[in-house]
Image (cartoon, rainbow over all chains, first blue to last red):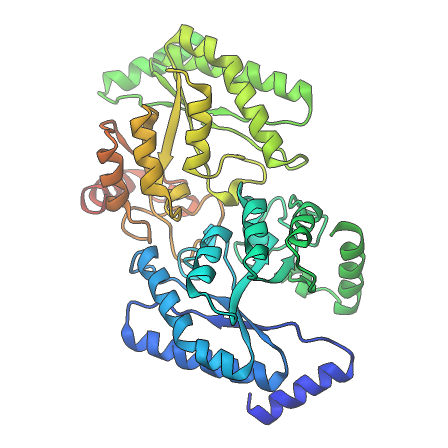
Length: 232
Length: 232
């Protein structure tokens, strides 16, 4: 969208008393091909401008992975990519939240697959403009989750908290997330850790779901509110 | 199968000069319900007898997870379950290989989702009858994989090595594995780690795949042999 249109969207949302927590998403820094890496920097600088125009102070980063190279190499490129756009983030007052993604997305979506890796990356970057987004869907299985959430908070990197549930069975790797309470993620438990780590921002419900997107969206919103109140 | 039939199957395979690497699978020790945990012990004792009758000296364990309790609780029950059947394994001369499963199976298939967790479990059990099965499909994304494979070998726990590939895209969580070389798993790299850890057993090709199982199986076997020679 053009800057003017983006500003109008931001105003429209605020006029309806909706807070714009973040722009989702930037990222995809990892490419074996140098020209694609350069192009990714342009994309992310544009996303930072859009976040500024929209009036939000955070971008969530799906960091990327190129299956034609090692995960280590992808992580190196991710770090270089984020470092390259930090000046833009700083100038716009927009923070960049590294979101560790579930290992089932290590092929093409992110080479950062645990909170420990995201913490390592954020601490290495050592910038007030970078941090981490914690999403229960990606991280619930991790035996070190509590420890890493506390670490994330202590280091001042805990920027966002996303919730949904893991359905049993899950029939699609991307678009079959569940409503809080209908799966096996210990959401309340994880929330206590996030709050113990000092996080006091929004609990963002993020449910990518082909079946639920087909439902009547007003009824679906009511279900989300109910599930949020009862199971998160 | 009855003992006599199992022995016949074992003889048939050996008559065709096929080694029976392992019986796959035992496990599913984790249940909130006590009677189900007891029933799982019976199942595993029966599997140990079957492995003995078949003439193989190893059972691969898919350890289980009960989504109605925490992963920690499931792991506690897994440890207790394995401990309870070690005397049977010892009597039959059958080793029990804990297979860590990909985190996308943490809901109902296994609460052991990294090689580090499997190593921890095997070392805690501290028995010559227990060890670990390393499957590239489950573990390739893990940043600590090399370290944990070496540890597994050093502790005498590296009992099996399974290979296949991760397809891009993967369209089913269970039955869409790829042939070596058609995905993003660094199989040759992981094999060097496994061999550096002292493993000299079979490289077992394990490709659960609805589409490939529909193909002509003689032609499919030839593809597997070719892919094994070129890409593993």
